Length: 270
Image 1 (cartoon, rainbow, N blue to C red):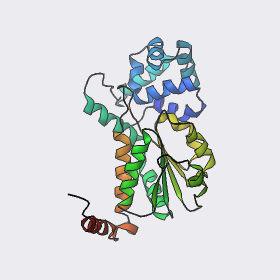
Image 2 (tube, rainbow, N blue to C red):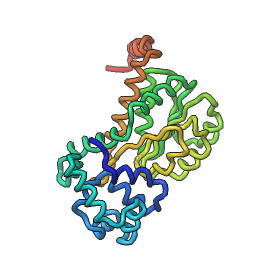
Image 3 (cartoon, helix red, strand yellow):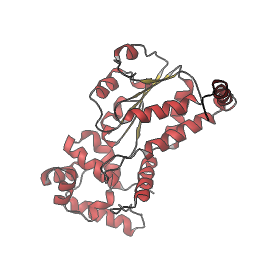
Image 4 (cartoon, rainbow, N blue to C red):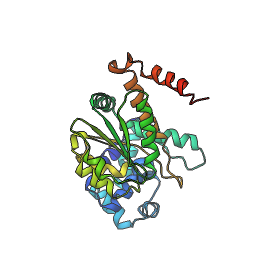
């Protein structure tokens, strides 16, 4: 489904928005059709901002007011462009699929190809994740280890990062998984690690780092439920790892067979 001009403008303006403006952007990027039914006051209430902030948000995007956005979207719909519908009920599967769809709208095939090449060529892969991002990074590591060696996960339990970051080589690829409510150290790491070696996978709030990383993968976690969903980043990781496995460099290697034989030798699996 094509993105509306409204959503495109949010993405282009995200880095220039205030922190409260980004709260509004995060909500409307995932629920663009809501502007057709909500007032300025209702958007302010949902995003925990103010009516003045919401009005300023639309002006920053180049609109006179909310009504102009509504008119533009209705005109697009009249011309045949479909608009996403936000589900307010308990249709959780539909909501999950919508988050995955929104994520893949912003991930181009060339983005995946570029990352697959970077992972294939790097001497080592370092994955970094904190808090809820840590298990996602752990899963990414486990999938990559099926395909190639020299993949590490940071931070190690109870350990500091300085020694490990100092050990990053010039031909290494660093992938930071950093979903919302991330620790402040993430920003320091992004500024410290060379841009050409750095890939960031995160939620829409990380669009502020777009110019500081080589690649940015934005995954939608949802905002309609109390707890975040990680189905979208898991989908992206699955595609990346499967494409690496099917790439010319790794498709002829017997690493998976060797690992399977080692499982048997160690008697690790049922």
